[in-house]
Image 1 (tube, rainbow, N blue to C red):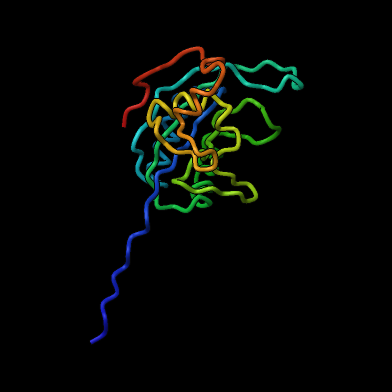
Image 2 (cartoon, rainbow, N blue to C red; image 1 turned 30 degrees about the vertical axis):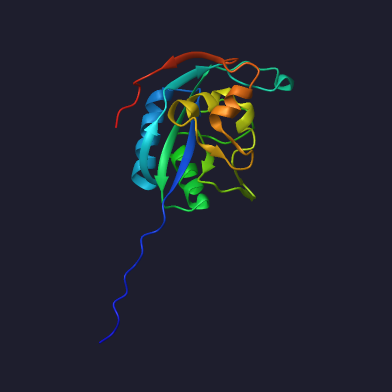
Length: 182
């Protein structure tokens, strides 16, 4: 009699994905993106309120843009960080994202900001997100769903990072609760 082989399920990890956009019906696009993440990447455990924010553009660009909407999801996934990023990029493209120049207006931007306690430095994939500690438009929604999430490269929680910002609401114009429902 041959031994029975039992496949062990892949280990799941909690990842945080930031959503941003400032072209078209952004909140409707966010809902579609979250639905696709749920279908293709794992279980959506939480979604933050949406925050309308001023567009952050380097002064050297000397251009005005429409305001952004920003939100964060907590996703339980068994995908590797690279596979998750690939799914996120496919979702962006399917929902109208056109990549061109940096800082350009966009229908959707999905950023992998945290992936468990991983620190990843690979071409095209840096986790935790390099500018996480500087961005109230990411930290504010992230803290709404998990202020105790650890940022391994910085040895601090997201709530501690938000508290360190000199002006936590410098670019936030409006907070919208209950914009998404599973």
